[in-house]
Length: 55
Image (cartoon, rainbow, N blue to C red; front, side, top):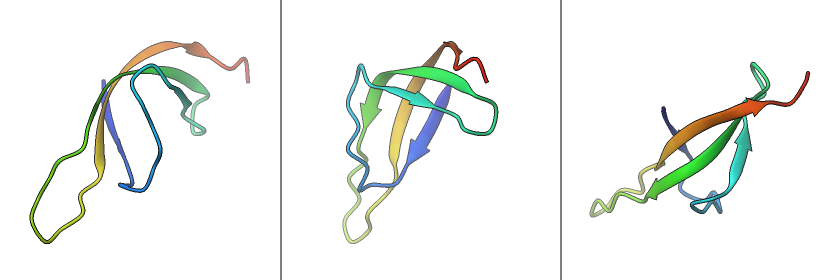
């Protein structure tokens, strides 16, 4: 699974994030910060679902 976060987000491989829409918990497996001259792009994430928050 993949996702994106704003370029200002402090996120690293191994972090966990929660999808507030459905309560899913995800492990960040890879973080890619694309470099484009003159434009700040979103950070691309490779994610693995690891469960839910029970909610």
